[in-house]
Image (cartoon, rainbow, N blue to C red):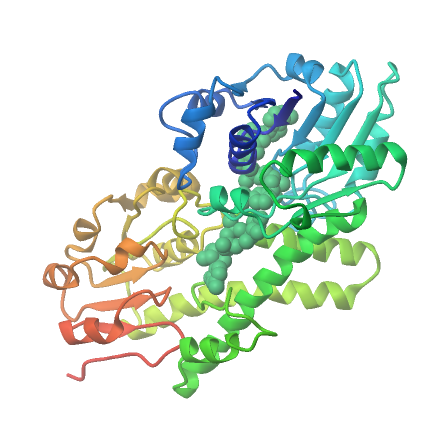
Length: 456
Ligand code: NAD
Ligand code: UDX
């Protein structure tokens, strides 16, 4: 039996530890956070995050071998293995502002560990970190006066929100990086044994610490690059009457390219892609590689351009003004099956339309609360409407911004009847049956395909 601690009860800490607790009943796992409200939510019937399948797991293992607590000090002392999954957002101040990772939460955790540890520990980097962060971690940990031994291991998390539980249960791979020393190898094996309870050994791969840290940034950069690539192609499709879905299908069948992450849309969002690419850009600049930095930075620029393009297209189609017009936004979350709105392109579109003085009604099955918080002062100008039919009532346009599958199942005839003529439908995710919508009477603007517009 091991006492495992996870510092940081967010999307990653909560989901990963719930699955470890389920799969390893012999281990006692505690998740701590400085945010008492978040811990109270993890202990309640309404968990702080929406993830398909997560409630069931948490309710079945909570208070059995999974515990949530705010007692950071005591739990550090008890634990043999400490996962750290605190947030590592983009720095907003000082050197590297707007690109580098803000490691203040991370460093604070390292200092707490060294302060309260009284026996040997394995410290696991679960957060996404700049390459060579473990070096700084080791320096802080070795600064303790009590001579406690620490092994630092990098075990980056590859789960995606909305499929976090499935990704944890059946990962493509688990990556564990450590030092090639006897105690480093032992630490890596201890972490590998946890995953080996349910992950086949051949999918648990090991690497040196720096490769493991860097692989996480590179994985997100490659995935985001694919999204930006297909979005760049969608712009060209719109000028040439090619269809981006047909192009994606044709290229995705090439095994060297593969079919995933080729859905054109309003751009990638979420807490990871932009932050991690910018972090890599900063690292490249730091290591004197401006050409490499510029190459990756363009992935983020293309993403911004795609959002700009989508709104510009709405404006020009709607007679160059949306001022005073009701627009219904279907979706606030950055993708389907999550309540997360961090860096959501839906909210970027919302803000852009507000600046054009449109009247916005936004709907989402799970993310309205977070959308309201993220929009800050601008939330006062927005109507938050759980019912999509009510959001569309009196609207000049519907813009579909999040790929919730239930939006494909709505009664668009009923929606059409509630809207102002001529009704516009902008499908920012290519989720809907465009021909059918056109037949109902909508002017339909898919992404990266020819629009279907009724002639007067
Ligand atoms: P999050 O913001 O949801 O959660 C982080 C939590 O850490 C917060 O609740 C915060 O209060 C807590 N925290 C901060 N400092 C603390 C301290 N000193 N002691 C205790 N708790 C502290 O973040 P997240 O989305 O779970 O991401 C965490 C890390 O995992 C980030 O580095 C992120 O890049 C990485 N990651 C995220 C995802 C994802 O899909 N969200 C996937 C893979 C990796
Ligand atoms: C991502 C990585 O996939 C995951 O491995 C990592 O651990 C965390 O970051 P996440 O941001 O949760 O996960 O979701 P993901 O499925 O990657 O989607 C990111 C964004 O890209 C979303 O806004 C999504 O809508 C968009 N996307 C994705 C597209 O626009 N087109 C696609 O084909 C795929």
